[in-house]
Image (cartoon, rainbow, N blue to C red; front, side, top):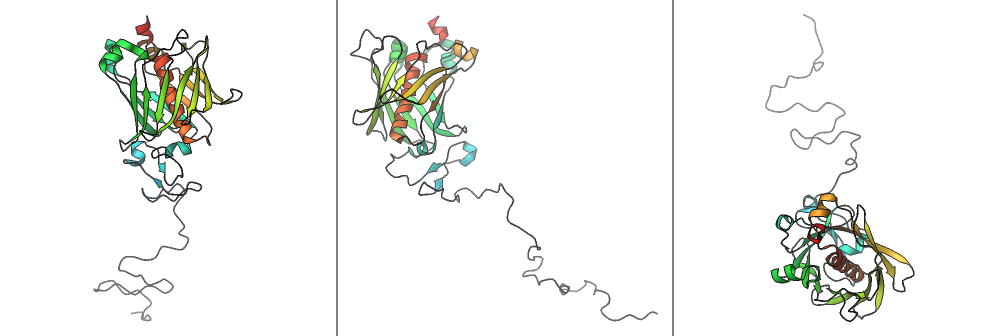
Length: 303
């Protein structure tokens, strides 16, 4: 029988204790667990921390708070700690575009019976920012049509009303310059942050966007023809003196079937990133006023 030195073969693992580690390997701290091998690096790119643990973004002075439902709900993250900003308007400090999509009402499309309008307001990434719901009665909706007075609640994902719009009953004809259209914007509700007032114009629609003090900050100049014929209808947002274009409100072409048989509309709003959030809110109110005045009645009802 050949003779061999003790220890030249490993001891069989047949006892109640694991064998001693081989030379050159660290001793594990717990049975079955050991330190990661050399070369183990940080997590791969694209790793996202758990919800609620996002680091504070630079320039906003506080963390970003996820709305209920998180990214699965499709809602935009709201920055915190924005100084001199009405509660609920913090979203508007981070964006320079808004997309307004009206919800299709099946009953209205089939019967022509006017129902309360509902809108979803999104950013340019498709994330939800606000939800808008019209508050009006059945009689005025179906008797006054696009001239009807209404209130509109602007809600966040918590169902909190962060803005309130009020449109009184008025005319929109150049024959009645003393009783033209207007929209009052409050943010938070009960605190007026600005108004949208129609200006007398013989051909092209014109509006003044005013702050809470009544000063005209911006103006809106509409096109001669507001019919949407296979293309967008653009309302230019101008500086207070009307010399420089700073943004626009575009009624986007939503397809032949939608345009013919419903009054469901898509709008895009662009404005300067550094514009006061109160004036951004007034601009959103102007979008709803323009929709009610020029695009509320479907072409089917017109014919």
